[in-house]
Image (cartoon, rainbow, N blue to C red; front, side, top):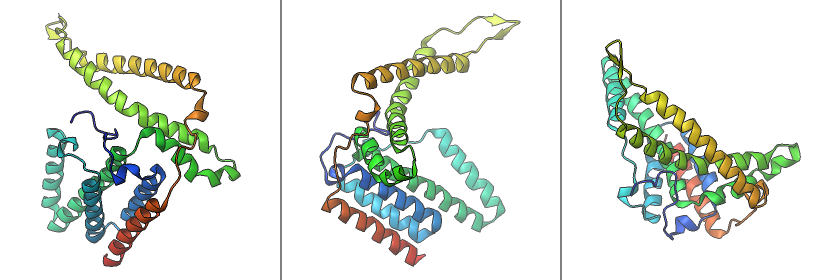
Length: 243
């Protein structure tokens, strides 16, 4: 299942029916817990929680992104360097890698189970108390929503541009050396496409009534959201106590 990164899976599950703000709070609680208690029990507890969430959300295995070969190589190289230092360094390195994987896993799980159109209203609702302090909450929410919407589109555009550029014949030579402008051509094309995308999105937002329509409240938390939040907090507390 290609193209599922940072996109909602078209399913109807208890995870999908949770309020977007609940999942934002869950990711924040998980992130803070891992930062304060970066221990094996905490990482294991949260990994187990995310595994249960993936099962409840019925995430198919083919939707899980596979890292490229060079990333595996970098991880192996880092492990080899730490192995030269000491065995304790290898354990610390492994825990750091799992720490990053769990954080990324939590973020992707939220993206798989949440419509991007619901993130901005939930974000604005959660930060509503900051409006009394003069904080531009709506601007923050709109920026977040546009980022989440544009990033998957940009990734798709990059894949198309790279594939199209590789089909073009290589340019001629100068002073006996081949002119390889692959990176320059791709960067120029990406900038051009990004500018066009931003102009199209701006026009679409204006037609739909401006940025106010992006942060309009669509849903509110309920009892299931309170139960889900309590479960996340309980798992993090258990991981902290075991640390």
